[in-house]
Length: 85
Image (cartoon, rainbow, N blue to C red; front, side, top):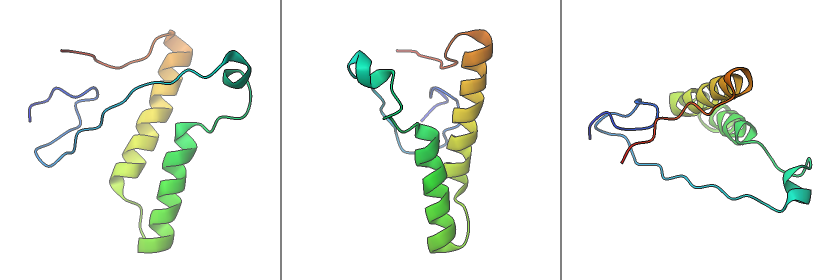
């Protein structure tokens, strides 16, 4: 596998993550009902600590990436993802 991922963090042992988006109806989209992905990664890190006594670096890396992406989106006004064929 070459360095062709969106964030160029993959290596020979990496799995392939496929992503899509779902846009809910406006009344749900602009509400407080949704759970941000950052909370999903934070909860995974909590489970790691509870079950294994340590945090898996993959979960920490994803949380940091999401938070840094959020900062860039707010400051620069675009999503910093490289998309190629």
